[in-house]
Image 1 (tube, rainbow, N blue to C red):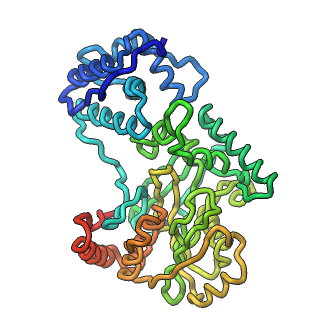
Image 2: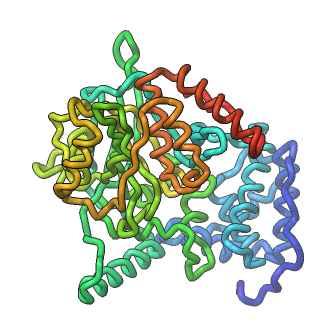
Image 3: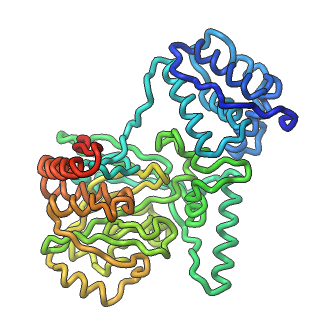
Length: 451
């Protein structure tokens, strides 16, 4: 039995950078020897890992011969899911903390890529960086200069609920119980709102100008599932975390759909007299408490955004968010979709919009907001910054708020500047301001990568 094994001593062997799969296999053997797991007992260890990852009620124990072949010579490649279930299970024998375990697994992933001659892993979509301000938001499509046209955005819905593995279902059940308790006690609570989960995201080019054409595939989910899957670093009964099981080291498209139970509409609002509206979220929202964020932020909701059963329209949903949070109706601004992005640190997908008010000035904006917005409680207040590259970039990089930004907001405000002034002008301001920060603080400033 697994419980009879002697726990390994000392640090696990490091995989290094093997030059071949045979060399990698030898290091994998050394890892198994360190873990004190005999080959015949390994199937139980791997079965546990598979059940944690998939939550499947089906038979998941790998055959002895399959595991034996994993350690055989002259392999050209491996079943990667099985391989890293083995690696994770062996490393877990020393009961490392979740963070340590994920770092160790990542070292073995890099070693496997090295053995296959693939070099070090790099993200297909790098995270966004603005000098010393680094975010986990990855741009999927859009560069700010050329908005994505409404008629080139299609949303398709597969009307089935996401399937939850037991470990996630248990977390969701806890959310249901807690919110019911809070409601009965007369406290603030979250409503079981029907939501969408991202199933897939597809981009093609169309027409002579190769304009982007985007298809967003959605499934059904709900707000309780979203809240449960945002408990990413909560230690689970088995010592794992949702981040380690489903996010860490994965491309955004490889994250299970139940972990993508949200699609956000982030809107930057610029007044007619060129003030950018910046929101400070309240501590009453479910996720992203007290962070600096876009002017309006809304999640797709099945009842409100698909009242007739048809797929939601992202532009209409963004307009709903502006109306509910800022009390501004659509005819008072021009709306442009600048980009699609995903925040990899919490698997939140989003569209980034710019709304330029036609005649409403900053003073009129504040007066209008003071007359009562439906979702005013979602924000604790607003700040205003001149919508010009210098003041806005300085505002983003200010040390007092640099670590308190919602990741997508930084990207949205940058792209909004690019839409208004062009990326050359904006990037030059970024480079100049970073040079000043570099001289005062650290050598970490550089021009942001071309989008």
